[in-house]
Amino acid sequence: MKLAVICFTKKGALIGRRLYTYFKAQGVDCEACVPERFLEQDWKADGMKNRGKENLAQWSGRQFSEKNAMIFIGAAGIAVRAAAPWIRDKFADPPVIVIDETARFVIPLLSGHVGGANELACELAAFLGAVPVITTATDRNGLFAVDLFAAGNGLVLTDRKMAREISARILEGKTVGFISDFPTDGVPEGCAPYWQEYTIWITIKDRLPKEMPQGIKVLRLVPRAVTLGVGCRKGIPFPVLKERVDACLKEAKIAPEAVKRLASVDRKKEELAILQLAKERGLELCFYTAEELALVQGDFKESEFVRETVGIGNVCERAACAGGGRLILKKRTGEGTAVAAACKALDVILCEKGFGER
Image 1 (cartoon, helix red, strand yellow):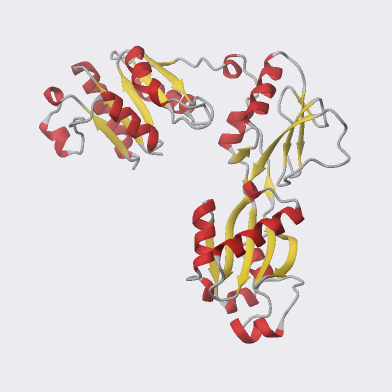
Image 2 (tube, one colour; image 1 turned 30 degrees about the horizontal axis):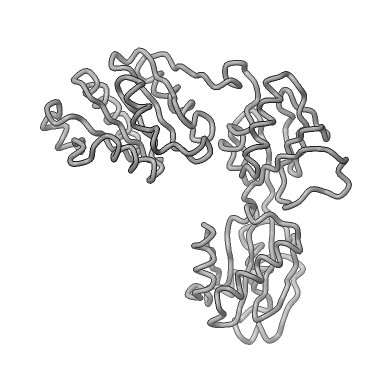
């Protein structure tokens, strides 16, 4: 995360300098803007600056577009007016924090949970010796917050409206179901480990199970745990590869949000269709040599033609499993493509951020 600090008075400038030094010492990318009349020469030499030709609205708009966390040192009203034209929703807005110019209070205004403003505010308050003013309802009542849980653990919220409804239900003291397709060390307070009228479901699936009771409203939280192994003929058109990948995901009932990386043999590292698919969907790319793929353990469907072409009898299944994981979609071929999928083993740790790969 990149941080942007802005102040308007001499007292604010001194706090801004403290924060800039604090973040810089941690290796955090921080932009600090101070009015020219308060900008000391050694501060300027250290990288602090004024806003230049940007007015406050333009400066704020740039931070929003770049998804930078913003720290305003001054009156809350200034921050509200500066941010107001750019606000979309809590799932898209970057964190916005206000610190008064005496550094007594640190107030997260926007994106307290999803963007991490509450957590950052507590960190800044501890550093400054200030009071963090946290106003989000689940925090004030010590309740489980599904959006915070998802954001902190890298889970994709598939339905924002349902997330709000579940949070409201928890605030009302009603029980919410909590189902996980992955090992978990417990169930959040206010939840039950079976299907309820409202249920949280941690899964890589793209649809609800047929056997699920009627009338249940489900929020899927999707971990990015899937690797797609792909092979294709040289020069394959991007739309063909994209359509085949989507068809295979649908067949396997895998949510597109669950895919984290594309993997293939290193001879395909310049294949434009693979590169374009990864770029369009924000996927990691992994390429392996034939020798590396040959070491992957598993029961794979081998092809002599593929072996003669690239030096290994199966690219897609081996590539999918090369980073670890269980094959959940065996090789599917068609239109010059081969696609397979593997899922990493994950653990759900409720008391920490630790939803992660084994």
